[in-house]
View 1 (cartoon, protein in one colour):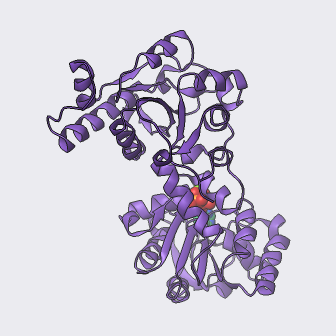
View 2 (view 1 turned 180 degrees about the horizontal axis):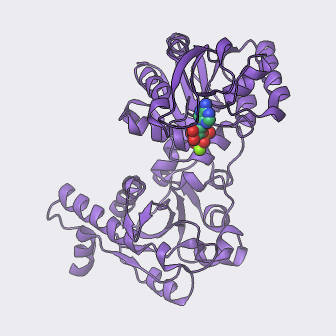
Length: 420
Ligand code: ADP
Ligand code: MG
């Protein structure tokens, strides 16, 4: 799948409406992690270099369609201004910005003060958007202060669209939702992908359309019920399927092993058998854990030990995969040219049971030539934790969105962008 990007459309001097994902973790108005803001800088800088007038929009948290001061984007506007100010003056010290006429707008290009409005639609926003100078930035207030955003209300989408002449979507994390700012506006303006969105589409579509081979998928996480669609879809694409985490327990039980008090979904035993049968029919090599770390209780300080999957003690529970499993997985991955990983191998929230996932992250990071892709929120957190994110070809920024992409679903926010 190829979509038009900001490079493929004339944005010069135009009002460009950009959907970003500024859903940052906040504590009493303080931004705990600004990586989502930083991630949008390439698109924003490019558009400013093209003398575009930027109108940025995002949701933040779950205000449930009502104004909630605690979820205002004001702290984000401030942080973005700081990031851009530093960046702009570092990159082009004292440079006069070509055809920006007034000294005022020249100064704002360098300092990049980000304007804000109290709302995201209405007369005040209209005025602010239409009086933007080239390179200037307006951030709209939280889109989800209005119930019309998630309802993909047509009038609301029209009001947003009226602010810009071109629409750019750089918010992959919400692309699986058909909301007014992700899908509605894209139907009303020429719609293209930003650089973040472009990279997501490029890597994730390779994983489902034309993967390099051999191709392995590693699927883990808590429940098989949330991963059935991705398992079935990837089965028709991959050469090897490696299963770990809590969901492997349901496979192990379906194979006749005793899994003690482990997390199991008894309603899915048949489906697990189907996956194993389909793998065999398609000639996909399916690997399940050979050994596991079991604990007496689900607690970090619980007694724990490593056992073969044949010997899970009555009353104990599986919390992580064992060393042998990671050794076997590592060998299976060695010749792979493409590896997709979604879902941790164990209960990563408890340090003693994060080891399998950490080791696996290291194995994949060291695969040399292979294209390596991480999808899924917790899995991305694991590779960040061990400082290996930069050693993967692509770490998706969208948990739910990347999972739906790997399930072969069409994401409404991506589908609405112009084809390249
Ligand atoms: P992602 O967000 O990367 O898609 P998931 O949300 O599917 O991943 O799964 C992450 C969760 O899986 C973690 O909270 C982790 O505790 C849980 N998990 C992994 N292994 C086990 C296990 N053996 N027993 C219970 N929960 C597990
Ligand atoms: Mg998750």
